[in-house]
Length: 338
Image (cartoon, rainbow, N blue to C red; front, side, top):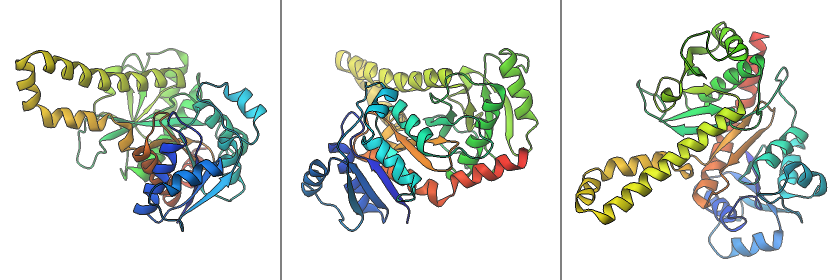
C-alpha cells in the first residue's frame, strides 16, 4: 500500500482533527501513514482514542506555517515546518504522496520547491472537485475544476496542459473513459474571451486525447455538460468559493425561514431528502481533498476547515491517486502531444 505523509500541523483544526482523521483511516484501511509535526502533541492525541499503531508513524518537526502567514516568508524562515518536511519526505522517496489542510500558498510552494514538474509542463494546477448535475450514465456526481489558485494568470499553452491533466485525472479517479472537457468563458462562441482564451480553445479542439466540448459559461458549471472545467487560477478560485457560498447560504436561509413560518416548515419536511442531498454534495468532507497536478509526485490539498472525516477521505484520495498512477498517466498523455 502507498505510504502517505500527512501534515499534522496544517489546517484550522490542527493538530486535533488531523490526527483523528489519520486514526480513523488506520482503522478503515491498510494505508501506511506518517504524521508530520510536534511528536508529543501527536502521540498524546493518538493515545486518546483508538488507532492501529502498525499503520501510523510520527516524524517530529518543530515548526508550522499558520493559515494567515505569508507562505513564501514562512517557508524561508521555517525550514523545519511540517508542510516542508512532508514535501521533502515525498521527494526523498520516504513517502509516496502527501496530504495537507494547511496554508494553500505554502502547500503549492513547498511542492514546487521539492517536487519535479512533469516533463513539458509549464505550470502546476490546483484542482478541486465540485457538486453538479449528471447527464449521462456513469457520470461522476462531482466535476473537476482547475486551476483554482496555483497559477493566477495563464497563457494558452498552460490552459491546454490543464485540460490534458484534468482529463487524465478524471479518467483515472472517476473512471470516466472519455471525460468531457470545457473551457470556462464568457460565451459559447469560439471567438469569445480575448486572445488567450481563443488560442486555448483552438489548441484544445485539436487535441485527439481530450474530449473537448468547447466553451462553457457560468451557468454550465453546475450542469453535467463538462466533467472537467479549465480556467485560470483567479477565475477558478472565484467560481469555487461561489459554489461553496451558495450551498451554505441556501441551507442557512431555508433553516431560518422554517423556524419562523409553519408553511416553510412543511415545505422543508417535504423537501428534506433533496435538501440533505444538496448539503451532502456541497460538503467538502465527502471528497476530502483535491490534487495539485503537474508534478511527478502527488500532493492532495484538503480544505482548511477539514475535520477528521475530511482528512480520512483525503488520505484515501491520495492513496488511490498513487495506486492509479495519476502522475505517470499525465506524463504519458502529454508525451503524445508534444
